[in-house]
Every structure is written in C-alpha cells, then in structure tokens.
Image (cartoon, rainbow, N blue to C red; front, side, top):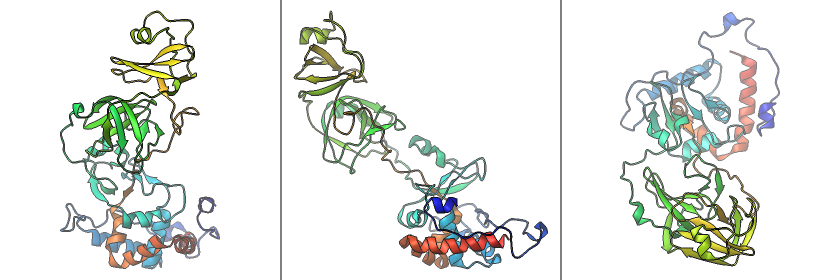
Length: 375
C-alpha cells in the first residue's frame, strides 16, 4: 500500500512463503547483499574501489540464489533505493539515494548514470563545510556522493566587491537567504539577469556575501570561488514602497533622521508599509521621506535592514520560505555503483533510467516474487 500511495505500482500481495516451512530453511546471512563483500583497500586504475567485480558477483550470487535474473536484481535495487536513506547508527553509511526519497520514480537509475559521483570516506571533513555533513559515513567506510571537493583557494579581497548595484550572472537563479549562513532559510530567488542592491558586503571564509535592501543575503562569490553576481555600478536609491521590520522613529527632516535626533510623534510599528517618495544618503545613513515624515531606512555599516524595500516575489505579501535551490545531498553505495560499471547490469540500469513505466511494471512483478519467496 505504501508503494502504491507514493506513485509506485499496485502489487498483489499474499502473506507467507511458498518454498519453506520454517526459519531453519532460511539462509544464515539473510537475503540482502553486503555492500562491502569482496572489496579491498585502495582503488584501481579507473579510480574504482579494488575488488568491485567481486562485489558485483556477490550481488549476482545473492539474487541468483533466490532465482532472480540480472534484470530482476537491478529492478529491485532501482525500485527499492527510490525510498529512504542510510543511517550511520544502522548500516554505517549516510544519506539518501535520491532527492525525493518518499516518491516512487526512476531517479535512482537516472542520477547514477547522469550525475558525477565522488568516492569519499569518513575522513572527508570538507563535506561539513559545504552543508553535506549528512553524507559522511562511519569510520572505515567508503561511499559515493554527488559533490565535488572544493579547490584550495585564498579568500578574495572584500574591497574588490564594494556595495553597489549587482547583476545576477548565473545560474538560472540564486538563493536569497534570511541570514548569511548557507543553512539559513531561502526567502527569495533573484533570477539570472536581474539586478539587486547590495548595501553591505562581508567575507565568510572564502565566500563574499552581500546584504540586499529587501532584507536578505546573497553570495557574490561562493565558497568554491564561483562568481554569481557582477557589479554594475554605484548604489542608486529610487523611491518605492518599504516595509518596517523594526519600529521606526519619524523625523521632521532628512538630517535629523540621519543623525537620529529627537523624533516627531509616535514610531511606525513593525509591519507597516510606507510609500517613500524620496530617498537620500547622508554618509553611512540612508533615509526616506514617507507620508508622516522622514525615517531611517538602513545604515551602511550594519548587517541588518530595519526598513526593507518591498520586492515582488520576496516580501510584498510577507516573508515566504522557498525550497533551497542548492544541489540535494545524495549518495550511492559501492554496491549501487557496480550496476553502472558491470556490463551485464548496466544495460538494464539504462533501460530503467529511460523508462519509468517499465521500471514500475517490472519492479511490481519482481517485488511480488520476492515477498512470496521469503528466502
């Protein structure tokens, strides 16, 4: 029922087994292949773990003992590994096989063929620095991940990226995060070709990040040295609608608002939208003229925007949380990768990567056979 409800095939099921009457007839090592059988330390000339052909034969032996062909073995792994993830406190391995591990699909087969995979171990602590610590296996184990190890690089000069108008140069969109931390919520997706207003620039490790006037942070230079934004010119301050994020004092003049002198009347409460007809910069202070007087919008030396510019798709209807546009953390076991490397297995893997309906049909038949065998 769970497979059917997540988009998989409808599989007729009958409890029990047809080949044995008691547990004494079950194999002592169960019916799942051991993902490390036959492997040896080091890698071969192709960079694959030594002994991987032994592991491929082990998979054949385990499934063959139950009467399954190569194709049935591949389809069971393709369908079964569309779900769930590995846990270091269980198998020792870590992470999900696919991006959507609660939905039946042929993503496992497609990703194995189409994506780049890197062999790592528990010693690859650099995974932590790119938000992929969940892919680090237990001590002594190796697995594959869909990541690239960052090249060693020196931190860029922040002075080379002063505040200003910046154009998104790629990819199709970038993440606008609530905080400069890459684990922070994504609150917007500035698209390629759009221009953002960077008020403050800070260095975080080897990444240069900028505070945008709508109240979020973007990466100008990513941790791997990739440039996502290119400076177009100095800051401009057009009028527009602004959203008060912290109670804002109102002043009689632009100078008073910049100096933070005696306020005029009650403050504008948090959540107020203000139509600002004029914006002025006084040193590090940027102020705007609203219907009731002048308010301070933000300070160039601060890392927060108390009065944010309203931008469509970001905060015009309150803050939205977007799906993280970053690459999903995925892994493959060596016993998965042998389906790609072994000539006999690969032809079937390719078939299922190209045809999800074929995968669903054949997985349903093989899974029914597996549940009824019970061996």
